[in-house]
Image 1: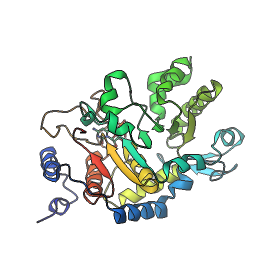
Image 2: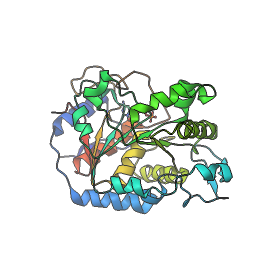
Image 3: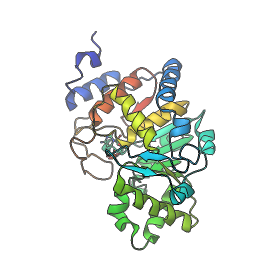
Image 4: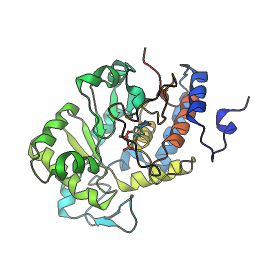
Length: 313
Ligand code: CDP
């Protein structure tokens, strides 16, 4: 029998209907494959060294270091007194927690709506979420409440919080829902994102917030981008969710991904919104989410990570 991935050459992405058929064919069957898990941990460690390079630290980015922005050409930041002071020491504490545990990576796909996956997600040892998602009462049953690490794109600071140029209270209050997690910001990906990220750092530290800010290391983001490019993902930029899955594959014992479903219909072939909380679509050519899904599904089928795309039991 021709495998799905060989049946569709890389330059043709299967239609939404074909993907639904393939996923239904596989059903809920999933078997953990330790060899696959060990292999991907090694591949990701060799290419991208997540343990050391995931975030900018005083150790990997000393004073005077030139950091090249990964999201644009010919822009760099030279680490100075101000920026060095806000870099994390080392994140041994974070990796002490993540290693040897079950991680949940929660994407924002509309497939989470009515999934009843909240309890499942909350049972993981380490829970990662993308782009400061809403965790209000309305969504608790579907997405859970606990968070250990959440990404925050500087564009969110701009759109939702007027770039933090005015009052910072609303921002600080809105962050309380993430408890005492790590906030992971790509402060050195695009030049206009650096200042809002630093302002977010100060807004939290000045109010003795329980949250810990980590700035994404642009070298790590670039190396993860290259890794997936070699796996047929050709996009201007990887999606946030795939960065987190890559981190999780490099560190965790077991990875389960929720909310990754970049298609316009669900498994019941009914229309589905892009996010579990709205239907705002991404810029068309920026990400290559369907290609990403195909790679994640390949890893699911090989038992390397588990994808939850249906309702949770
Ligand atoms: O910032 P970005 O556009 O990458 O992400 P988002 O829309 O906030 O969603 C978070 C992540 O969930 C994405 O980066 C994707 O990896 C995943 N996602 C998905 O697989 N399918 C969707 N329909 C929406 C998001």
